[in-house]
Structures are given as C-alpha cells and as structure tokens.
Length: 181
Image (cartoon, rainbow, N blue to C red; front, side, top):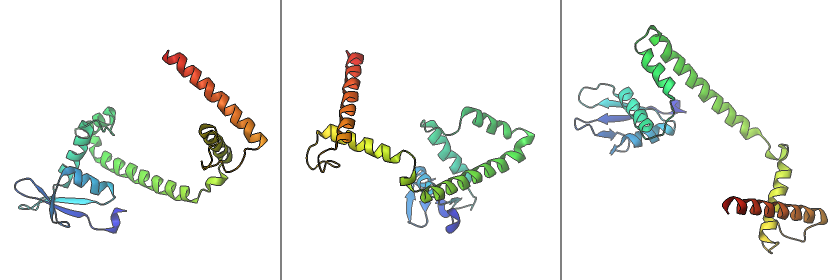
C-alpha cells in the first residue's frame, strides 16, 4: 500500500502555508487527509529549520475530524491515550497501537482477497432473494411490457407468488395508513 511510494513531501512555509512538492501548489489539511486515505504516507517539514512536523499535523487532522462530529475514537480511548502520556505505560502504548493497526490492515486485506474468491451464485438463499426481487418488480410494474423480468406471461407458481406479494404489500399499506392516521 504505502510502501510502493516514498512519502509525499509537504513543506511548511513561514506563513504556515503548506506546499505540495509534487504538484507544486498549496494544500489544506483536508487535502493532506485525502492523500493519506488513498494509502500514501506524507512527510511535513518546516522549510527553514527542516524540523519534521508530520506528527503535529496528523494530530491536528484527527482533532479537526473529531471536533466536526466525525468521531472515530471513543472517549475512553482518548482518556487512555492521555493517561499513557503520564504513566509508565507510555513505552507500551505506541507498540500496542501500531500492532493493532497492522493487524487491522492485514485482516482487511485478507477479507478483500477472500471476498474476491466468493461465488455469489453459490451463496445460500441468493436464488430465492433474486426470485423475490423479480416478483416484486413484476408486481410493482403491473406486468408492463419492457420492464425487466417481465418478458413473458407469469407461470402459475409465479402468479401465486405475485398474488401473495400484492397481498403483503396491501397489508403494509394498511398498517402505514393506521400509523399515519
């Protein structure tokens, strides 16, 4: 993922503006967050001193998202992080967090690999779901010609299914009417 490329170098000018050295333009924290979400790492350095400011800006991105209601970190985790800065557990927490996120990335990758191997047609019940969707579509379109899944006349079993779906739909409409009335 992020090992494929070098980190994107962002330079911070004295005016505190952030400059993307690859695209030769100024960027915002949200622009940097988008780059990171694509899997690319960034490195933010002060132009004059050469100090690495990456950690400071990454924390700022997280703080802005949390303050906008895009909360990812539960309060108890935030409390534990604050405690870790003032306790002897400080040395354990960074390794634990790094290992946890590495396991999460590995699990996501394996899940996506396995999902690609699944034959959706072999999933139990998929045929029944598709049949129900087709029957519902036929019922909703009233058998209009040209509607998907309405090529010919419905068979006797399909017609009974349609009647049942229509009956269930009518019941639902009655229940909704009672709830709203």
